[in-house]
Length: 330
Image 1 (cartoon, rainbow, N blue to C red):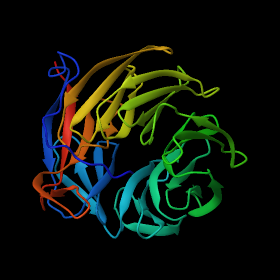
Image 2 (cartoon, rainbow, N blue to C red):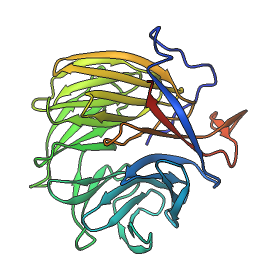
Image 3 (cartoon, rainbow, N blue to C red):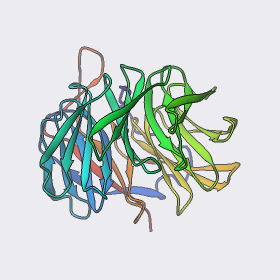
Image 4 (cartoon, helix red, strand yellow):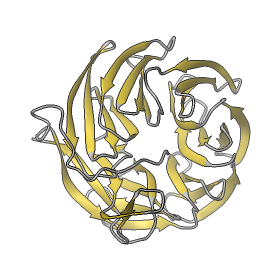
């Protein structure tokens, strides 16, 4: 995921009712060192990447349910529930850790392309796919053999991918401001679609019913027709978006913004989208996980002091890593 500057000012809501639609209802604190990236939810548990390990929490209580160690520079977590396996993308060690979902014991590690970042389980091909940022390619893993079966050059830095569930994969290319369309049968790139005026795409989600892609860009959510790459709409969102989630039941798109807001967009139809508001969360809460079963939203972040590091970013206060739980206001 891209590195972003965090803002210390109060997040500005763009609509008058933005204070009431969604709110932080719980905060789960995790006492371990390191930064963070993606967060995932699976079968009542929250999996938070954190430095060199993955912390696992009970979704309802925030109680620790264990951790997966030795995942250097971990970015994302994916799951194959039929095989009872979890997978982490380890950016520093250029590999994927495979672990048992019940015991959390290491199964194996699989070498990937350089800089594996986002990771996903692709349901149509029943494969695990990593987006390798430095290598500018994808690694396709067969979870039954724990082997890389294909490497796909996508022609840019892949940030996140979304599947149509029918054999096509859509990949945000952050450095090109494009979406690459991948044929998972032939392991080849079919098209490159421009996201202009969107720049620096990060999070990506897909609605199978409307056949629409939702790409989180710099201060902009770009809605794209997944058939031909036509831009359907452009919605202003909060600054520092690094994650997008789609609630298929409520037809809502969420973007997590590092400035400390959650942008919520309503999909009224395939061609009609409305920003409901930019709701306050906490600065640094830039990535997102959505539980499709109950609508709970999870955002990882931390506390920061006023000192800045050598690269100009705010300094995280050690021991303050946390997961925000966001729900719709009643």
